[in-house]
Image 1 (cartoon, rainbow, N blue to C red):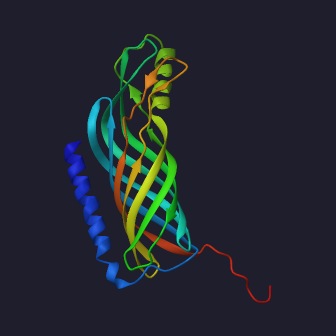
Image 2: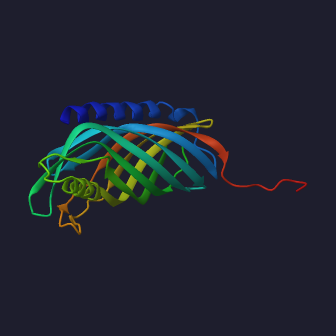
Length: 228
């Protein structure tokens, strides 16, 4: 995971530097605009069975701006392979889990405090993070019902809500906007299920470094027309 972290960090930095080269080409304009875009970078996380590391992440988003504020809605997926985690099952035994991907949904209220060619922005919001299709692997299950319960426990303990902070900078050329940003999510405490299983598949905060492009789809504000 450390090699993946280094390579993905370099990729995210390259995207941000590429965005910076557009800064001198024009100021960010456009109150009440609707944008659609895509981003990629690295998602850094930790589990009870793995030290902090990273995986490649890609996703899409929509942004609605109104003067110096906005609403950002995004979905992103970290693409891994044979990632390891663990939780305590109903008997107090450690149950190991494997998964590949991590999916994240975010809703963020944005602020654009400065109008300039390189426009910084900040945001606060909330979202959901979960492991995609986690599979218990540490025990030979006596019955199909026991296996089904372990799979349900892994899904429940692999999904968590979070609060989030976002910061970044964007640059606009015509209808196209390039950006680089960082997102921090809050850490979650352990959870205990009705089955007796407890813990979390993710430990501590997650960090996302990304860069991408978005395009204006036009005005997000209706304007009256003469004759109607």
